[in-house]
Amino acid sequence: MWVVLPGLTRSAISICYATGNISGIYGSIGGIVGSNGAGYKGPGKTINCYSTGNINATDDAGGVAGSNNDTILYCYATGKVTGGYIGGVVGNNYEATVIQCNWNKETTGLISGHGDNHSSFSGSGLTTVQMQKTSSFTGWDFNKVWVIRTDSTYPGLRGIDNAPFALPDFLKSNRTFTLSRLLLNDYDLQSVHKNLVLKIIRVSEGTTDSVSKFTFPANVSNDRADTLYYRVGKALVADTLWGNTAKSVITLDETFTSVGLYPEESLPLIQNYPNPFTSTTTIRYKVTGAGFVSLKVFNTMGGEVGSLVNERKPVGEYSVDWNATELAKGIYFCRMQAGSFSETRKLILQK
Image 1 (tube, one colour):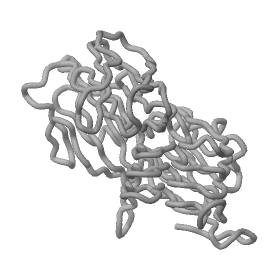
Image 2 (image 1 turned 30 degrees about the horizontal axis):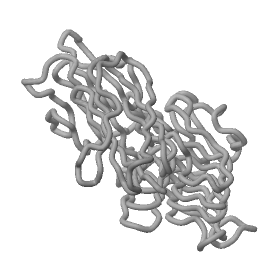
Image 3 (image 1 turned 90 degrees about the vertical axis):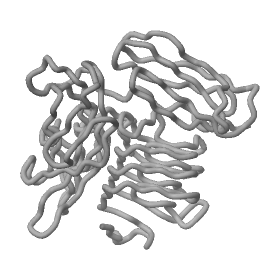
Image 4 (image 1 turned 180 degrees about the vertical axis):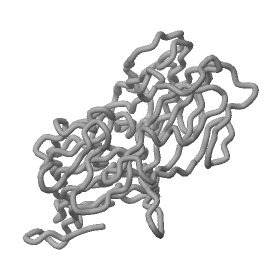
């Protein structure tokens, strides 16, 4: 849905949202708009919009816009963003303006809202908990434009039927897990939990019938975690209004008789900053279960060019600097391995 507001240019986009995942090759890829504005320095305005889908591109990628040539105001994004030149809100924001736009730094995997520092940017990277509070959205109009169920949902838009919100889960369970339990942490602005359904996208190890239950493999022992990705929807009379895809980490505990919250609730590896970088970049990561952690950097041919962490680590948040001064410019990959968990991020070295 998009609306052209009176008094603004014909390229204004307002009062809209997107929930689907978007992938693209080259160009600019964003949750709401690819390139905000017709070219260098606009014109183009995106106002009061949000995106909850995952964004992936080979070049500019952002939660709201792949590139921005004019102005983006009062927007937010929560989906994971991957690509070459990326930001939680905007990928390439060169000599443009972003006003009070936020992003979920846990689910996007990013600590920066934009990939280019030659611009005006205001807004914050928030945790999932902070994203559910009006106090986190400075200057936003929650009387006429936005609405929120405090501590339950992300902000939604007044006057339209918002899709339901799927929020990340970190749970422990015995060997069989009832899938409907995932919906207890998901909300619809209009009906709360009423008529919510889910669709399993994929699982990392276990098996699922995609409808009612998930089962850990027989050879998996206690404290082993499995990751499920599912999409939440709201059943309507003739159709289903689908919301975003959420990540749920379920840890096996056969001594546990039901399902409970798992205490460590954030992504183990967070995007490096700055990215792209010219010589040194800082990589922040979190260890959610004490154990051996490996953090290594590889080139595009798979050759190891740096070993940053190779030791046991207790639960906690860490950061490490990678100095690539002596390496050629190009794309590198940082891979974290912690127990059964593995995640890889793209690093872009420019000189």
